[in-house]
Length: 421
Image 1 (cartoon, one colour):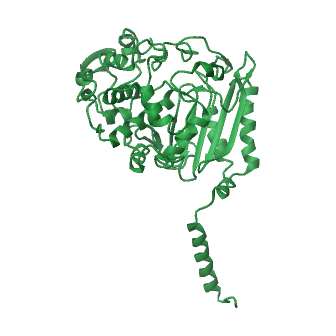
Image 2: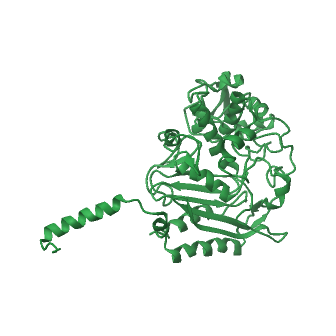
């Protein structure tokens, strides 16, 4: 067979061949090799640097591309004082990363026809029929009726106006109800010897920060949704999440309270001191918490879960897969698309939106090196996760440090992206 010698024809055939190659899905192995291994090694050095400088006690990092692990590393100590090393199966308090699971639970109930996103919360928790707002004008505070009822959609998008009650002009009112400053940093309920719905009904008696739909306000929203799920199903939240999400996905180390036989795997909480060094946090709501020895009765849908980086990666892979992974279907692709697209307009942060449980990246550069269309969130103890569909990446990091004043949550994703060819 003779080869064509027409330059234009050769160029056109080359373009067609290139297009055909681009149409063929890359294999998992090919995707793996999109990482520069020498640059990926830099991640180890950076993470170890935080430990060596004493800025963190330890961490576990995981990167997956199209469902395959391309990087996994445990560094430092799970309990520095006891000499217990960090391992990839160490268990962390994931705080607000719990919100994503509770949000998925709500969407699964929607898919079963048990609720509508625009339902008023009062349909399930009557105490929310007449919520109030603390309007502030200088030093003057006026408590007024909310301009409308709060909906489930408001709660999912954090536009209900509900905060954690730590703002100075409402803090005393929340404290009197065992909320806000009386609950650690506001979100902590693991030490409460009462069901979550009892706590959330009491929340309805205090004024909220803003009117529904008026602003993006981070707070108890997802905890209220946890109560809604219980009311609809008649089943405790821990059992709902276990039977509908964690058990099907084989997330065997994800619990609201640590099983007694796994206590030695729970990571110690540290805190950044005035010099930025990690020091052991005290016992109690602002420190170690009651995740081992507590009453084990209050299941906080917004902040209560314990998990491992490998477990959470399985949940993330289900979301990245459009609601399905490991032969298990949790949600429909349309529901996942709804959850991972911006539903709040410009109420959140410039260049970032918020869906139904996830922060979204609306333009490249708005959140580090995330591609537009990425989504994720994090937890108060320092954990983060991001999903970047454009390059098939899931990026996870777990630490347990509160407060945490270093920049590891910003630098770690950057180090992952710089290794991507």
